Length: 284
Image 1 (cartoon, rainbow, N blue to C red):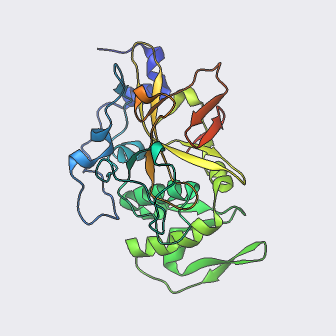
Image 2 (cartoon, rainbow, N blue to C red):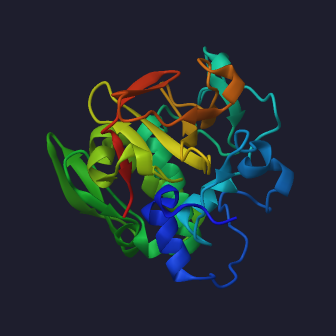
């Protein structure tokens, strides 16, 4: 059935204009030793809300990659980086099968950075770079070539290091100092503003500041009759903890899906943060 053009949105129209995509290999999740089973992936665990369909995504895209995220078995609790249980388990709908690290570093913005870096590593490692809060642009390719950074007071300066081959272990060594000196403020500048009504998988809800928070839009579905969109949301928090899908505690009938608020609603409430309508961004 063809959807009315006004309900497809600009992104959907672009996909239609592009025509069929060439076959893409299965998404790769570089931290895993083996390809996750289909039943353990996000899209299989969370069916769209009744009457809705997942919005179309390009093969090989960041959004499609997020739909394939491997999940730990249903009922797995979220834990902090040191093994303690997250206090508020009621907000946890599922736990992503990715490590939280062993230090209190992979918090909210860092979880977004981690997943984005893993996606780019699986596609083109030369595109991996993130700005620090100071504005310094830290490139993974520079890190491999023997250039990193050091912090002196309020300054971030280039610093030499041993050159090394590209590997997942090198990626993790690169990310640790990035986690330490990037945050919600730098992430809010890393993404481009986008209207909440046009939200797509891979967009980021981010309030930059201290305190601030960031939540990743892991998937989006739309009701073809009403045009309303619904989101699956993933986050880490403080202290650093497992990345987890959020449960909609205010509307339990939706499970882990959150309705995109209409223009008359100035805010979007998530279980552990309330965002303004204007606080949605998209990576280039």
